[in-house]
Structures are given as C-alpha cells and as structure tokens.
Length: 174
Image 1 (cartoon, rainbow, N blue to C red):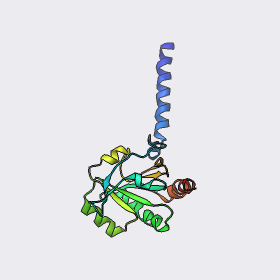
Image 2: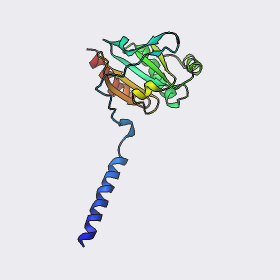
Image 3: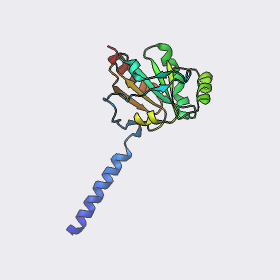
Image 4: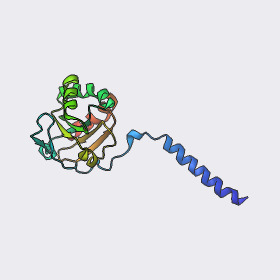
C-alpha cells in the first residue's frame, strides 16, 4: 500500500505545480534588470545616423525607453497611445528601433506619427539583448539615476499606463 502512496503524492505535487503555472500571466515575468542600472550603449539616431545617443545623456531625468519595430503588429496596437502620451509631455519617450530596416522605420513613423523625442537604431539587436528584450514591444521606465524601475512586456495598454507606468513616473519625478 505504501509503495503506491509515494508515486501518488509526487503526482499530486506535479499536478499542483502545473495548475499554478497555467494560471500565471507570461506578461508579468519579472525582469532581472528592474532595480539595476540600465545597460549602457551608444547607438546611431534613426533620423540622423551620423549622430549617436547614449542613455547617460538622460541623467537627472525620468524617461521611457520603448522598444519597437516597423514589422511588429503589437507595436502598431500601442502606437496611438504613445502618440497621445508624447503630446501630453508628461514624460519623454525614446524609441529603440529593434532589428529593423532604417527606411521601413522612417516610413512607419511618418505614416503613423512619431511619439519619440528620438529613436535610436539597434539594427543588429545587441542592445535589445543587453536589455533582456523578450520580443517587441517592450517599454522601460528609467529613473533620474539611470536605473530601470519598471518593464512593460508587450504593448502598453491604457490600463498599464494609468495603473502602473504614469503613477510610477510621477513618483520618480518628485
């Protein structure tokens, strides 16, 4: 009888772990970078490829880094919200154009509007890897000291913006 209880107990534990795992939201995967300095980079600007941008230029400012691409369907979904946010001037938004063709990215911004103070070109995706990008879009809230305070995986939604991102930005700007 006891020889059946051990396998039955193991089976019950495995089913419990499976049930817990199936109820988790994959968009809430904690980033190991939250609470750590944003990775340094120096990349060409999308509109002016002969000029570079580095996050150290944003020291003393709270800002958003939005990873996007012209080939990304979810980026198109969040884009109107980012355009509205940029018009409100609450927080500067910088774009990290990820693994994209420059001409396609420029055409996309011209067609849909450009919410970014500046877009930076990460054509090879190395900076995206440094930031732990799972897939585009992703958005990072970076504080005055250059520390990542929040990571939004997937498109920014009205709920995420109003419930998490903007309250955090306002707190960090104090």
